[in-house]
Structures are given as C-alpha cells and as structure tokens.
Length: 543
Ligand code: NOJ
Image (cartoon, rainbow, N blue to C red; front, side, top):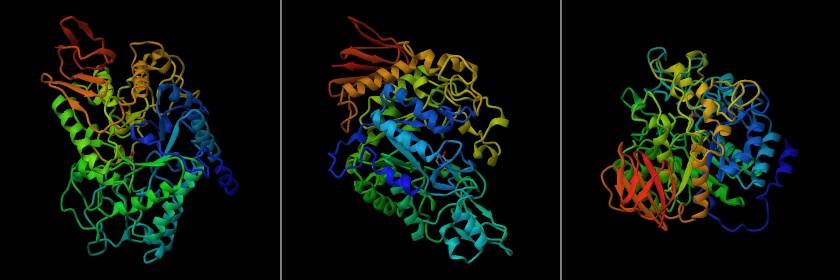
C-alpha cells in the first residue's frame, strides 16, 4: 500500500506549478457510472472497474466531461456498496486498487475526469470500527464513533427515539448486549457519530487518500445527514418517509453539517487541478440546497427539486427560475439531473401513463436539461432512452428497501439493470457471463450497437447535443435564461446566440421560427408560416 501511494504522486495533476483555474466543473456534463451495471470485464455477471476502463472511449466519444462512479469499495453489498467496510480498498468483485489507478490514468489520458463516491454518513456493520464497537460493549470509548444508546421502556426494549429508517422500519437496531445503534438506512449501515474527532480525522484522511490517487472529485452520499440534532429528539410523527426532503429533520439538513464541508473544501483547494465535491443533499428547498455550495463549502449539489418536477411547462419554468435564483447569491453553478440509481428512469417517470414509457418525452426533457446554464448529470443508459424495468421478479431483487418495507415497490432495482451494448449475445454485450439482473429482450434494439450511426436514435441525439454544448460555449455558461412569450404548455427561452423551444403539450404548436434548427428531439417542420413544433418536443435553434 505504501509503495502504491508513493507511486500515485505521478498522477496527471501532480505538479509544483500553480494550475490556472478553468472552472471546468461549472458547466460540466457528468456521467454517472453504476459499476455493477455498466460493463463486466471478467464475465462474472457483475460490472467491474476493468469493464469501465474498456468502455472509457465510449464516454469520451459521447462527449461528457467527467465520470462519477457509484461506490466500488470493499463492502458486503447490503446496499449495493453504499455500506463500506474499507474506504481505502476496492471490493474484489469490482477489481483492485491497481485497476482503480489504471482507470484514473486512462480517463485522464482521454481527457475525462473521475469523481468517486464518498459515503460518510454511515459505514458497513463489517467496518473494523463497528466490529470493535460491538466487541467492546456498552460504555467503551470505541462505541462513541457511532450512535449507541440504551433503549426506552422498563427493560430498554424500546428504541431510544421515534426515528424511522429511510428504508422503512425503526432507525434503531438492538445489539446483543442490549444497547441500540442508529442506522438511518439499513441495519447493516450504522451511522457515524460526526461529533467524534476521530470520525472527522478519518474522513479527512480518506479524502486525501483518493486525492493522492488522482481523483478529480467526490460525490458526497447523504451529505445532509452527517450531523444529528443534540439529544436526538423525537420527531413526533409517523410515516417519516413522507417528510424526507420536505422538512428539516433532526437527522437531515442540520446546520452543523456545513462546518464539515468547510474543512473538506480547504483540503480540496490544497490540491492542483480543481478537485470538486458534489452534495447529495435532499433538502426541502433549493434555497437550503444553496447552503451546501457557498464559496467555502462544496462546489455543486444535485438539484433534486428539478428531478422531481412533472413534465409541465409552468412547473418547469418555475423550478428553473427558482434554481437559478437560489444559486446566484452563492455564485455556484446550478445542476440539472433527471435520472440516477435511486429513482425511476425518466423515460418511464415522465410518461403520462406510468405503466409504460415515453421515450419521446424523455428525449425532449433531456434536450431541455442540456440547454440550461450550469452542470448536467447523465445517468448511464439514459443516453439510450432506457426505460425503468418494472417487471423484475421478486427473487432477483437486491434493493434493501424492497425487503424492509412491505408494500414498497422496491423501485431501485428497476433502474439498475445492466445496460445493453450489443444487439446480440447473452447479456447484450454487458459481459460474457450473463447479468446480475435480467435485461428485457426489447433492449437489443436499444443497445449502443443498434443505435450507433442511426441519426434518429437517442444515443445520436445525446452525442449531437453534447457536441453542440462544447461548440457553443455560452450554452452551459451563465446564470440565467431569458424567457420569451409562448403559448400555454410551451417554453421558449433565449441564451446567447441560441433559443430553446419546448412543447410539453400532446398536440403540435405553431410558432414563428426563431432561427435555424440546430437539433431537435423529434422532426420539426419549418415553413414560411412558422415552425410546427410536434407534441412533446424540444428544439434548439441558432439565432
Ligand atoms: C444515497 C444513495 O444514492 C443510495 O443508493 C443509498 O442507498 C443511500 N444514499 C444510503 O447510502
């Protein structure tokens, strides 16, 4: 390991020379790789780092700026790797540290940046610290790195407070010695006690470990959860799932988290090459999200309010304005995201009929997102127009939420199905050994191979859009859009040298053509009388 670290100082950003600020992250398109499901290099049915390495040229050609990888650390996989047993080791199912080093180097050679996932709110119950905490028993200082408490009730048989896990059921589990420990997610994911200096030191050291390896940034898991309100007070309400993201709770979005990020920003700024961090912070409002990206904190935060907006022109316009307005005072770029590994893929989610999917709307939504100023996140497979897989048999499901919450749909497996690369073959080119979740037969025609070179395909639409975003540098830059008058259900906004029109209605709409068509999500007809925007279509115009 020591030798490995010494070697890592040769990473492309290591230099004694000051590096000019590029602000690369302000308008970056960042592609999320879900390592289990991207590409399987060793044929065991599970995606891995060698698989990602092989496919990096695909990502370069797609035109993204950076790649964020969901966790690949040593983990018992109780929550698909968001339960980390060793933050400085790669799980053998994904490869080795040597593979990770190779991935970072290959990516840099191709001009791609690498962002890794950091999971600071909780560890795995197989993390050495948690095993020690259990072994040492009540009263031990080693327990204080987690939240252990005696229970309530005559014999301590009731949880210490009324908090519910995000995955359902109580947020507390009783250890064999009678004390309870807190886990906002699965019982296999005990929450760290962020008041403890050892926890703070450990994560600063983990940050440095990966920065020394050459990563360009971190996606911070549950960034809003680290600090819990003093005394762990009851919430006094049931069905707390409904409150998540809508309220400041004693375990989410506490003001104390910001001190943690200030200390991390100082570390990031010590390194050359503009290393960044993006917060996964589900807060009640975009204004509270802006607190995470003040100039001395993190660089970006996911815009979940945008992700949660319906395909409705008025609502979209409002969330776009509100997002841009909220970020302006802190001078942070707004981010835009439609899909990730936790939500229903937007080809299905935005469909008027939730039982089916609507690639036409998905394409229109994607072109709208990519026309907005700021940084955009693309989740693997959305560039293929993949739908949510809604008919997975219960036996293959792995999402812990599915097992813990009776009646919950277990949606998160449906967006995690391995992506199709080729039209033929057992797992459509994902790997030679099948795929850990079954892929629908209809995905042959959605594969990278089937779509490449077909100008009508979603893949070529993304490629063209990302190429234009690079060629028209004003597109991702700036901090506002200028709305133009438009009929109900239609959005028209102007950017420098550019107009975007979005028809969210189910019927064609005729408008004066604002310029010449650069790109459109469906064929658009321009005549002397104007432009006929088909239903559910976004058009980019040069003006
Ligand atoms: C957010 C991650 O995106 C999700 O997949 C995970 O289950 C939770 N955080 C807990 O780590």
